[in-house]
Length: 348
Image 1 (tube, rainbow, N blue to C red):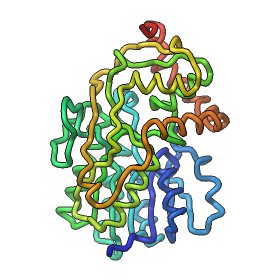
Image 2 (image 1 turned 180 degrees about the vertical axis):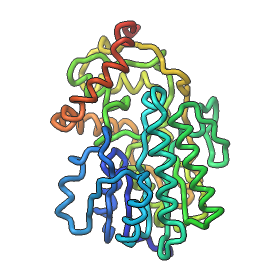
Image 3 (image 1 turned 90 degrees about the vertical axis):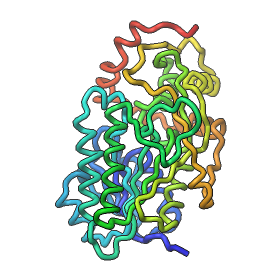
Image 4 (image 1 turned 60 degrees about the vertical axis):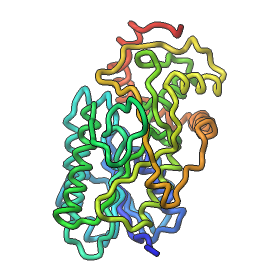
């Protein structure tokens, strides 16, 4: 039986998926966890501050693309595995400026791969990727052997990073595995994403900017099911660059998600505003996760259950998201949505 690594480096640790994974790994009994994050706009140290009392935990503020510093940290902490969550992830931001996506998603991944290449005792590089590398799925469910067809600069940067991970596994023997997950939701998600954006806007009686006709379909998974999948994959000992899709197979149109949020909060449908769609907006995502399920992993949360719990979390954590939605976020929101909302139309 494969034994999980005991000394982990988690990148993007103060972000949404990183925060949830760090908490899961510590609760599961990891011996040592080093949390790396640059604390850019989506990295929130408040997510992790309460963990500083745990002697197993260390937070390091560092740019994942800073090669020399990253390499030094890997050696200093005798890192056995990396769970690489650090990424610029918002499609709309990538359309406006792809540069940060190249630095973090591509250069950052290469810096980590270089840091562990040839390191004695290093056991697993787990690269956390996305279903968006497959592009829009007209029918069926994307399997791991499907070609990548990214539609956005964000998806292209993640597909490039996937390619470098597989290349380093093949050429340099870096022990690596890739997970490609469907759309996450749950606690600590930055409110530029649709579910926390709509929940927090609805709580404040603000408009909900719904792209296009609202019928784009996403394959939703609760973040706790995702991080349980990551923990499970770490224990498999698969290090040949293979890919595992991670999906709960909850396909729901964005309009339906919107309606459920409004119902859970008791808010009127008149808050919904149909706005101009984003360029190249993928119509549907859907993943087949049979390969991972065959190893024993299963999602545990239904979408209705998980969404209700998520809405409750944001309702109870107003100080957290009000702090996040201040300052620079307000400027971004104004740039992204103000003109769209002025030109938008009410829900039919």
